[in-house]
Length: 546
Image 1 (cartoon, rainbow, N blue to C red):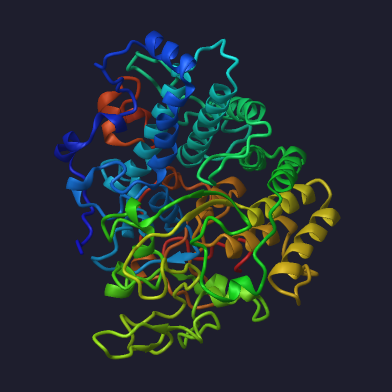
Image 2: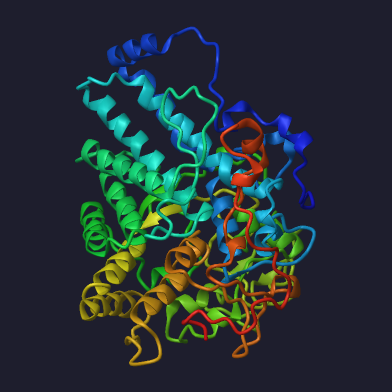
């Protein structure tokens, strides 16, 4: 296994393929755009490979930098999701040379020449380019049902990409940010390489127009694979966006529509008594990245190698580079809540692993998972939420990645409903938690605001799935990794808090984009704030872990 390589030198940028460059228009080929549209109209199936490729990019190993880079943090959307979660307060990583994602924990990923933040930029623009190409290939006046579905998928994907970008390059949607710079917008057929940052208002207008278009075009579309965006998922995406935009009534309606169209139900308590979250066929998964062994030919650039805790060949079990829950959050999860077992406790115990054993090694049994001398010892509060493809100890680092599930929609519906009718929102939240997670749950009688209780439940339920910083930004919350109430398990280097308005929270436009886009200069970047150091922000609170 390679140790992390923190710096991404400008010289190395020339190794990247042009497909990751925001403003590069591919040249060459044997068909003009008009000829391609004619072929597509005559034979819609010819576009199917482009659709498959558009969705596959998010699960691709070496998605941005290529295999020659040897970067084990380059494995598509799951790598971006883990980076966002490590930016937050609730996921704890180790401070060692094997941790490819330490730049997210210590916030050095706001340095615009680094590799990790460029990956989180280029991957989405790569998919945007593919979505634009699909749109450009379809005749504007087509009435072919297949092509209209393809167009709807492209609009939905592009909306997802811009929504995944805009929240991290400017503070959240609101009157004070609408005219502030966000990210550049790329439209089909764009040839002007001078492309300045669009405003927050412009980006959200594009996102909503794309989703509205997708919902119309995907009406009654039920894909054969959960790797595609269905009509239900399109409503789910719009629910996410409306929640950020504080269109609460519409967010609640969209979330409910997504649930009803999909028809699934949450995981039961019994289903959560073993490690899971790796199988797209689960009844509550609405959208997923299908990551089979053939998708991950290399062992280490894969999410199970750096997030899950059961692989026989991984950074986690191999060198002890585990991902843990912060004790501040863990300490407020009731013992009656089944989700508390998603992490081992201070004595390395969890009911999820009581009956599990590592397979034998060279004829010798290795023993139960909770003894401290198996593989690399679990650290206190290590996650055992995510299971292992093919069984405990398997060395194949495959496993599907959940992009949307019913529980998230239920939590959106509850929060959004409660922002206009708090009693109704409390009932929805209580029904979900009490029925599916903690039979002893009652909404706290005092001491926490309604929206903060919703956030607390999201922090527990969606831990490790990439939502931490999205919620931090939209709720304008301080990032609190340590306080005087409970001793934190964040390593010393990562033990700091950040205020909700700290300019260092904003991601920087990568150097490669500035170099290739005359519309963005160094002065146009997010330049406020400073790299935090251990002990910064003492005394900040978040309303949940106080």
